[in-house]
Each structure stands twice: as C-alpha cells, then as structure tokens.
Image (cartoon, rainbow, N blue to C red):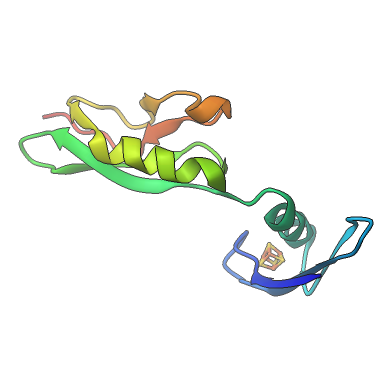
Length: 119
Ligand code: SF4
C-alpha cells in the first residue's frame, strides 16, 4: 500500500510517500531529511498533531485565550480535547505557560496558555 502526503515537520513541506507491504515495513521516499522519514512512518502507524485553539476567559479586555498542547497528541484524542476546550470559561489572571489541562488522556501532554492575561 502507498500513501502520499506532505511533510509538515518544517516549512519546506516536502511531498513524501510512505509504502508498506505484508511485513509492515514502511519505506518513506521524497523526504529531504530524517524528520520526514519519522513523520511519514508516524502518519501510518499513529498520526499525531499539535493542537492550537482558543477558549473563553472572563477578562475585561480579551475575549479568548490562545492555548496549545506541549507536544503532538495522537489524533484519536483531539476531538475530545476540543470539546473540553470549547466548554471552558476561565477566570483571569492567567500567566503564559500556565497548565490549563494536565496530562491529556494520560498522554503526558499538557494544554498550556500561550499568553498572559492580567485583567
Ligand atoms: S522532509 Fe525534512 S525538509 Fe522536508 S518538510 Fe519534512 S522536515 Fe522539512
């Protein structure tokens, strides 16, 4: 089997292909560096993404707080994370890098604030 994709590990955006057979050995081609090889194999075995979003805060000057995960999250956990994020209503102050959700779905990945909001 073969899957064509674009490597999103850096802005170069190489077009890469992952091919695998009965032995489940995955060969990646088209990548310009080792990160593309890792990305192509991970996309077949367990695709992951960094999640960025915004959530409601009770602030007098900012309506929503930008947040992101501290690492890549397996895709199967992203919908439930977004559902939690969109139900949040946080009080300020919040300091950049504050943990909003710790250890998402036992992955060891946290959701953190990406900016500070004082009032
Ligand atoms: S293969 Fe390497 S150079 Fe190409 S997009 Fe991926 S990380 Fe960037």
